[in-house]
Image (cartoon, rainbow over all chains, first blue to last red; front, side, top):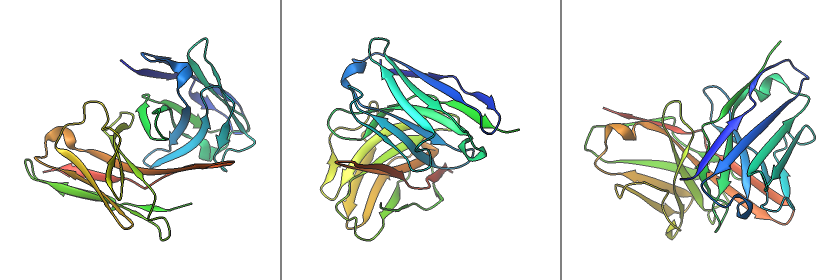
Length: 119
Length: 116
């Protein structure tokens, strides 16, 4: 069974930093491209970042470019998101999400971890 | 980047059928769209991908045959037949584009489906 379990969320002040983690199991993690997608309270989904299976390619949404860094450790079956210079508008549930092998469809999502940016 | 437009709400009676619509902005009629179901307090669940030729690839794990898709022009449709209580969810559509250094994923605002 595919499982994606996020951790690392919490309350942080504006300008602060936070590192999210995603533990993957039930599939060959090193073969799949991965993403972070977020959802502000009561709002729709917003794609944040993408990383290819071998970490060769990384993409970011304009709203987080230069502040967030995506990475992965295939030996540990883990995905990360380093978030710096956090703003109020970064408050959201952050989901770890897997692309299926054939295209960029996201075929599995985690349950999410809540990040609250507030003073 | 395309803009994806979804009606904010829809409703249907138990056992009836409903069709949800996701409309791509002008100029993006060749784009495929993914449908996701999100139950309250849960992460999204992949339903299936749709283009103008219909479903692309396989449905998501555990998605019943009651769910089907169709694509026409700028519209991508998700039809649910014989609606059950567990179908009450938010339904999101998303579209992606990856070419060279240009990559993005965009989502619609979501449609909240209420089962009456």
